[in-house]
Image 1 (cartoon, rainbow, N blue to C red):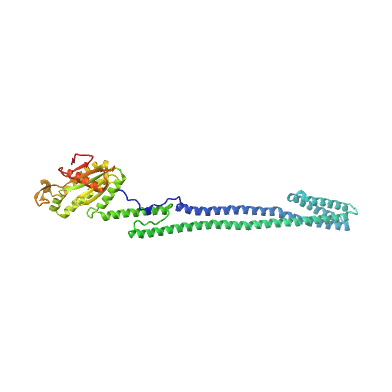
Image 2 (image 1 turned 45 degrees about the vertical axis):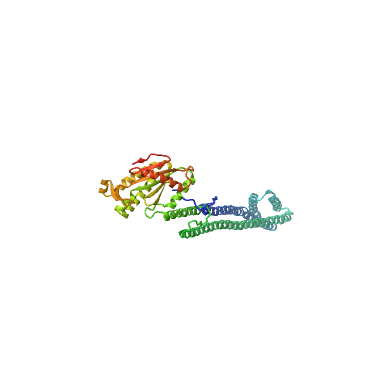
Amino acid sequence: MKTAPLPKTAIRSRRSRLSLIQKIGVGYAAMALFTATALVYATINLHAIDKAARKIANNELPAIGALVNLRNALLAQESFAGKYAILKDPAFIDLFRQRERESLAILAMLEKEESAEELSPLKRLYAQYRGAAQQLFTGKAAGAFQLRSVAVKLLAVVDDRYLQRQVMLRDVLERADRQRQAAIRWTVAISCTGFLLAVGAALLVSKSVFCAIGKLQRATHRIAAGEWDYDPQIEAGDEIGALADDFVRMAARLKELEQLNLDASPLTRLPGNAAIERVLGERLQGGAQFAFCYADLDNFKPFSDNYGYAKGSDLLRATGDLIAAVVKSCGGADGFVGHVGGDDFVMVVSADRAETVCEAVIEGFDAEVVGHFAPGDLAAGGIEGYDRYGVQRFFPVTTISIAAIICGGGEYASAVEIARAAAQVKDAAKEMPGSSYRIGRQRQTACEN
C-alpha cells in the first residue's frame, strides 16, 4: 500500500546548516583559538620581559655598578696622590697603584658593556691621569696641579656616564613595565573574548534547542488532539530539524492510519471501501500496470445459516487473515488488501504477481475451510439448506472465487469501472466448480484448484 503524500505544510526547505555538535564545536573551537592566542601572546611578551630583565641584570646594573666602583677608585687614587704630594711617603704610591689596577680592571669590564666610541673619552682621560700621577711620583712640581686638573675632568666624565646609564636603565624599566601591562591587558581581553564567544555560542545553541523542543511539545499536543497536518515549523539542517521532519512524517502516517482505522471492517480490521477507492485512484494516477483481485466466498450464506453467525464470523476473519498473509508474502511491498464487506475481499498487487497470489489464496483457503465444517458434513461434501428463494437444497463445501483484472495504461478511468469489470469476471469464475480464479484481459480460461 502506498503511503499518503505529506501535507503541503510538511514540505520543508533544505538549507545547509550546522548540526548541533558542529555548533557546539564551533563555540568551543573559538574559545580554544582565543585561549591559545592569549597564551601565545602572553608567552611572547613574557619572553620579551624576561629578555629585558636579563639585559638589566647582565648589562645595565653591572655597568652602573662598575661606574660607581670606578668613581670610588678614582677618589681613592686622588686621595693617595694628595697625601703623597704632602708627606712624600712611598707607601701612598703602593696604595695608589692598587687602586689603579682596580680602575684598569673596571675599564676592561666596561669595554664589554659599552661601545668604543662611548668609552674612548674616559679611557683617554684616565691615561692622562696616570701620566700626571707618574709625573707627581717622579718629583716634577707641575705633576700635582696637572693631576688635579685631569682628575676633575675624569670624574665629570664618569658622573656623566653614570647619569646616562641611569637614564638608560629607567627607559628599559619603563618599557618593560609598559610591555607587562599591555601583555596583561591583551591576554585578559583575548581570553575574555574567547570565553564570551563560547558562552554566546552555548546560549544560542541552548535557545535553539529549547525553542525547538517547545515547538515539538506544542506539535505533540496539537497532533494528539487530531490536528494531523500541524507543522512545528522548525528549520531543517540539524538533528532537531531532522527530528521535526520525522515528526511530520509520523503525523501524516498517523493520519493515514486513523483514516484506515475509521474505514476498516470491525470484523477483519482490514481497510474498507474508502481506502480501496483511494488506493485504486493512486494506482491509476501512477500509470503502472497492477492487478485488482476481487475474492468472493461461494455458499457462505448457507454455511452461516447452518452453523450460526459466530461460526460465519470466524470463517470471514480467518479468510481475511489468510488473504493478508498471502499478499504480504507474495504480493510485493506495495500489495494492498481490503474488505468490501460480508464475504467480499479485494487485493491489489503488481500485474506479474496476480496469478501467484490467486493460487496461494485458493490453496490456503481450501486447507483452512475444512476446519470450519463438521466431519459428517465434510464426508457428505456439503450441507442441506435453503436458498434465497426459500427452496431447500444441497450446498457444497464453501469455496472461494477470485476475479483478477489487469489495470493500468489508461484502460480504466476510475475505481467504478474496475469494479464493474471485476464483477463480470467474478460471475464467470463462480460458474466453475470448486475454488477458482480468472484473470480478465490476460487469461480467459479458469484455473481450478
